[in-house]
Amino acid sequence: MIFKIYIFHKIILDWMDAAMGMPSNIKLMVDSTSDLSKELLEQYEISVVPLYVIMGSQSYKDNIDITTGELYRRSDEEGINPKTAAPSPADFLHFFEQELTEGKQILYISMSSKVSSTNQNAHIAASELPAGQIHIVDSMHLSASYAMLVVRAARALEAGTSLEHVIQDIENVREKVNIEVLVDRLDYLYKGGRVSSLQHLIGNVLKVRPVLNIIEGEVRSIQKYRGKMEKALDGVVQKIVTRKNEICPNVLIIAQTFAEKMAEKLHTSLKQTNHFKDIILIEGGCVIGSHTGPGTIAVSYIDL
Image 1: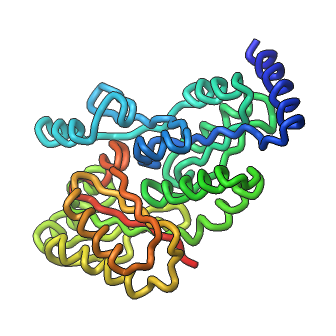
Image 2: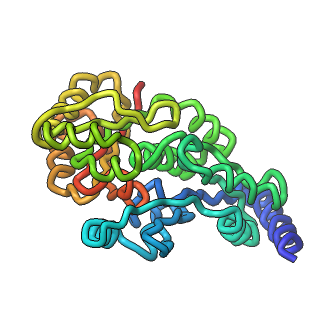
């Protein structure tokens, strides 16, 4: 039945496009690890497929059934180690069918396929629906760097760029997107298996602040700062300021989880460079927060 409804809507919209010269009706979709603000989602009419956060025997939809504050409170008070899970193919099928019945083509930009089965499950769902109407692109990123690509795609579509060229642009530029993630506490990385017990102990004693990067779709740490978070943040700022002429000035994105003051400080410091035209602040969701912990701050930018 859904296919008949879809075909009817598609015929009507194709006729209208031909008569009025309108571009194709494209629906942009993401998953919740993009951490886009409510304002951005509404501005560009972006739909979000939530991942799941698992606390003990309970499963919650990211930023729908549970907040980051509740996650951290329960983790600390109850000693629960939060885990995460990808949306199922059935979840994606539900979201895809809803848009197809409205006669829309779908551009789904996913989180990195290297760290989750989310992208794979989207492909499984798309294989059960009419071919050529669902376009899935792997961002190869998470949180702020993922959001960077989504905002870039949304603005290009809004400006009338063809879907084909938008997809090509994402695939070309994703290797140039950088993210610096400064982690305050090693507890959550340790719980998630990202650091060993020895590294956890030494890091806490010496106040080592790892900087996480995303390279070829995978999370890696290639730099560390020792001392207070403010000192480490100054190091990140200095790195960006030193390289600013090698960085695209159009957009820079700052993400934070319970680090509002530091995010504002970072925003002020980078704004004073007079290099970046648009600096966007977003808040990390439960999925990202369950791996990095509170007090985390990230900044993403694109190399020229």
